[in-house]
Image (cartoon, rainbow, N blue to C red):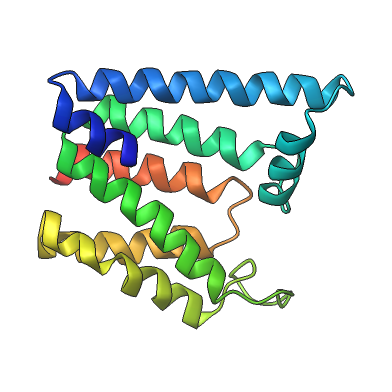
Length: 172
């Protein structure tokens, strides 16, 4: 989000700059992942990836899905306000939802490790986006929170990027 805002201030090519920076970051994550798999770990980067990959199937999985989703959002949307709003919803909403989640999910509950409080925390902390896109975003915040909360057997951050990209393309 910071890359898009900063590059939009300095250049007419803000979308291109943001996409190139994200591609560079993605290639860097792939390089670090290659180093991890070949047992020649980079100490500080290994610790960072271990920290952010607690629930991942492999190290750096969430980072890769987040970057790929960001590329899709930025590449298809092409509107700075929608891009910033989408990145805000996903980053702030995800952090808020994770802050109110429970450590052990109940087996009979449809949410993975989320509860009602984490569902509404996602919506509440994402509400500043109304200042950018207006009140028509509110139903999409509830749907995004539902996607974040349900156990859909796929990375929820990537699904949120796909959902917001399609929502911005068809409804805004």
